[in-house]
Length: 115
Image 1 (cartoon, rainbow, N blue to C red):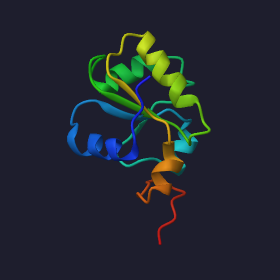
Image 2 (tube, rainbow, N blue to C red):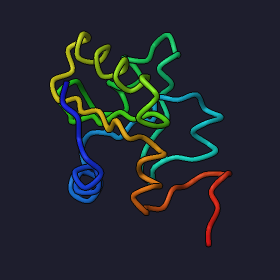
Image 3 (cartoon, rainbow, N blue to C red):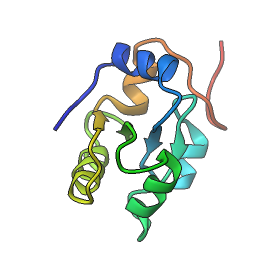
């Protein structure tokens, strides 16, 4: 499984106009806090892989999945499911929302505290 670091995710956000960054948590969690530029496709959705394929513009587009934190395994499950469905460029940002915030980067959402 290909994982990426926070810096690699920052570069992905800055340079990839194709593909998608997918928050695989439920909609409530996504609306509370998410990485800017990401979209929400909950892993629990029955048509998860079809939704990702539509939003990423195909199975060959680069896709980054993430969830809440290093302790959350939803992004790992999502990455495996996407690979099994034929996606060719899937990366897992294992640190998730919590890791992004700990690294000092801004989040978006209803439950984001700004200082």
